[in-house]
Length: 217
Image 1: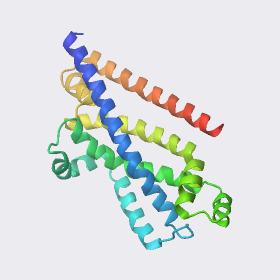
Image 2 (image 1 turned 135 degrees about the horizontal axis):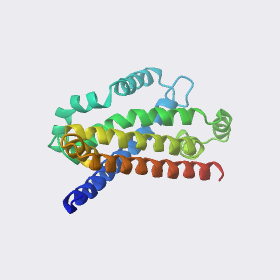
Image 3 (image 1 turned 180 degrees about the horizontal axis):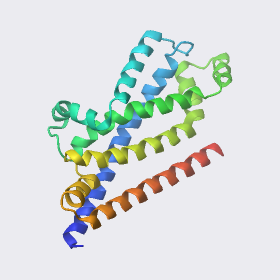
Image 4 (image 1 turned 90 degrees about the vertical axis):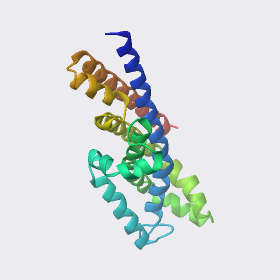
């Protein structure tokens, strides 16, 4: 393999890390508050707002129902308006984040719903404010599930980032399609697959390890 191709693979690897890392941060920042809202606004929640809960829930389900490749194409005008381009790393971060936020929010929502209601009632009985219940009861108790859900989400995003290479998003998927598929370079294709498998395995290991530590704290 030529030095140029090795450099290209390195650059694609770091592009993939940047795409997925930036999208993951955006997903956490938006997804957790969204999940908290879905839980506390549900009927019987600590700030029940059934209509708003139903509307937001429909929006979340709507984005989850659209396949990523279709969503990415449909978001092209919005992506261009937001980052000024429809190709490259930044253009991929927009659809990656928008696709991952509802997926992650639903996983976090499930973890929050599994928190023992008795803990919430105990906090309410001693006069805790709603914001304190969210910050000091709901989120800490659901933290192992949130970390586990984030691991699943990031692994899914790595697969989606490779798919985004089909429309010029850059990263390992772009190299695999342009050189591995279109130029029939089997070596490049195999190397990209091995890198992706290693990356996903490492993330899954770190995620599982962190969840075990949190559950045993």
